[in-house]
Length: 248
Image 1 (cartoon, helix red, strand yellow):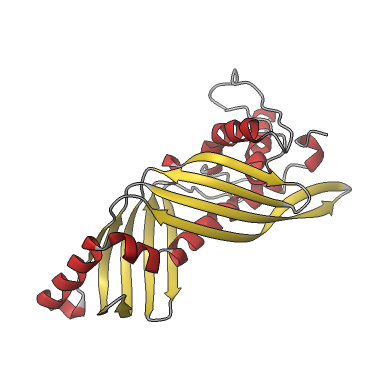
Image 2 (image 1 turned 90 degrees about the horizontal axis):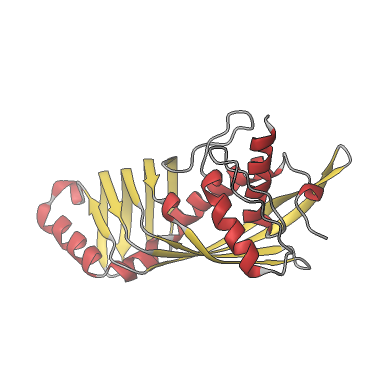
């Protein structure tokens, strides 16, 4: 692995640790290095945004997958009054996200990311049954979902481990809160086995009440997607000892 890629990985670790990091973008080695103390929120937020594009890139050497577009074979939602599965879904939009703030608590080993994303698109197959707030809904077939602005609050709990005498960090727990800030467009085909009147009524309700519907159904989807990004992150972090990016 080249020294430039190692520098990029170290910078990526800042995204998850809010410690010091080093960024060295492969196509532009002139980008300055970022070295931040854990309590310097302004510095680490700048560094996180500089590093974030690297988070989304694949790296076959360590098994990191591409994150935008992202592929999910199955996303399952088991809500109190609604059950759904999304199959073979392609998600785009994580590249549009910007970190407005990033806060690391060294004593508690927690990281909080306040993230604004310009929008997402999801396409795939679905199976759904239950009640969508007040309306019964069932069906299976093709679906698409398009959003505009979304805010994600991502809370991460970290752990420390030692390997070959070196200390490393990884993420062990994740909490996600998501809020749709602008309209979401839902298109689920073949609802009610193609009964147009029933299907049109559900889609009209979903699109007119986009925020309430998003609040009801979005958490399983975002949890699955953020977990996949964090899985990538942990693969990168296992390659970088803590003493290569922590500022004392």
